[in-house]
Length: 242
Image 1 (cartoon, rainbow, N blue to C red):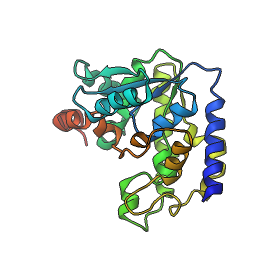
Image 2: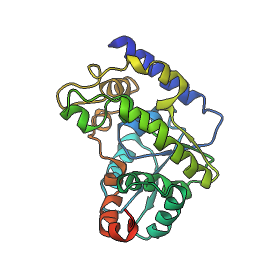
Image 3: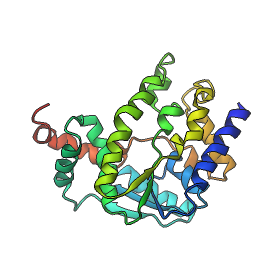
């Protein structure tokens, strides 16, 4: 396993170093994926977090800011006209589903509050490193379908979302170098019992991230931000034609 850990570390580090001359923001949740990228950048990336004031992501980022001595920029959803963003996102992708709306809305709103041209995301970490809970619950489940959907549906949509704000997304977990070694990133090296993303957790420890950061359990963006609760209340009005 050590070889693949070293290879992933080297490719991630190289991808982050390629952004050295760019003014970069990072979509930050206080969890493993975004904290690792932030650490690999030497804390050069400017972290932005979006959520309702009582959401888990805001709580996690408050904790992370104390632990890592960083100063994330917080955008609270409490006073934001979310429906306006939903309408625009539906214009960008009329076929977007309820589930997709949840996590894409977080990124879409966040980009409106980011002045930097480049926005780094942790996209791809869950697919490549078996980060979804369903991979633990179903030992036979492969990640190929999820990776294919990522490239065929999610990334093209997010590219359009970024272009709407005249921004460019940077996805180090999906860099050309990472994709060259992705077939060596196995389930066995990433899942043990109820723990997943073991490769990334080992790299995070190597990067001197505190354990309370890299062992934090994952919460999907739509749940961590609290936006899923909002969408559940508004679902019938938003998705009349579904």
